[in-house]
Length: 282
Length: 225
Image 1: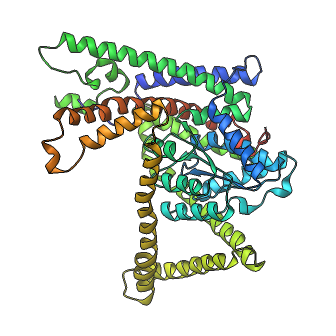
Image 2: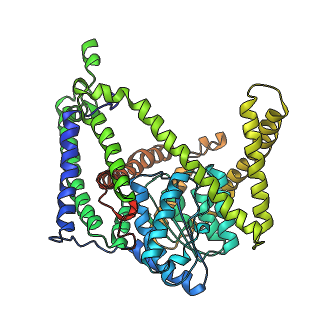
Image 3: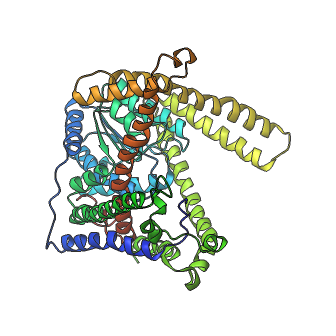
């Protein structure tokens, strides 16, 4: 049986969502009140971000960052944690920093955020609109605009962290051609191989969120990372139960059906119940 | 009401709609909220359309300033502004005289869109072929155990998918099965692991956005923290 489309939540989804979200809210609340700030392990990607910043500043060459096309959402918020860290270093060492844009709504948010960062760093005069140039909302027009910017400015470090599609390799090769140190990160698994082969270090999947939390030094973000681990423990327990259930069901019904599909396991149907009319038709 | 509080309020109300739209049972108002989704999407589209003006202002200020002050590479900026204004004017003309055979339609559709824009987009896309070759060359340099593993699996997958009829009898059958196993077994497992981690983190980040727990990103205090 195929998994039905999800239109509204079943009780299974309500319970599962509660089990995932509540531990995170508890950890965030504890961290905000400074009762328990969970330690976040320093991942290698964070070292590489700092190394790229340092190298760019030593060479006196600007830094360029692209977030791809994540839209305004959770990923952009996570990437902005890393962006803030780079912008603070750029403000401190009076280094040029560019974040070319392909989405006007994201541009508005990023410009405001960078303005705040420069103001908090005590260098509001260094923030200029040229830092967030709007290139195009078309995929390959944006990619060619980014290539031109990286080549013209001779960037010392490029950060490609966010959501990418087919343009990822074009963006990554632009930095590679001018010898810039590049750190990338994405949650789009189809683009991970391209970024790994073309950049110096790649943050994979949730590392993007963890790096943002580590670099921002915000207790809320650290509590959130601990909450994610608790949520993953819940999901892993659910997966293991499902695997064992499906294996037993396959052995039990081996005379009737050669292989039990994932949605045939009744545990799956608790989470996503089959539509009522489908049951009636049967 | 300060700007920050207004943003927090609008974000919370927006999140509240989508929360109830998904979690409320259909007979207890869920159906009503689902029926209002088109209206909510229109509101979001209007807000997005307002932001388009910001893009125009940004282009005008960044590139216009460069031209006025005759800064470095100002002729390129001038070319961009001319292209921008021309496309805008003929785009509006095309919209006004839609489905009519006027000069507006001919210039916009045949010259600007099909002749220039599509061709340039295709040219940039075609760069991918060369870049993939360059990236593959770097990836296939065996400098570590991990690189050797990538190299070996990539080689076997490519051999298993070769569309050359002459080699059909030369390449063993197990290679095709091995390729399928790598792609649908090992690879899918890794993809799901990435999705699990990123999906969980994204969900929790979304909850933080809803309650505006990250003050820095919404213009509150702490952006520089």
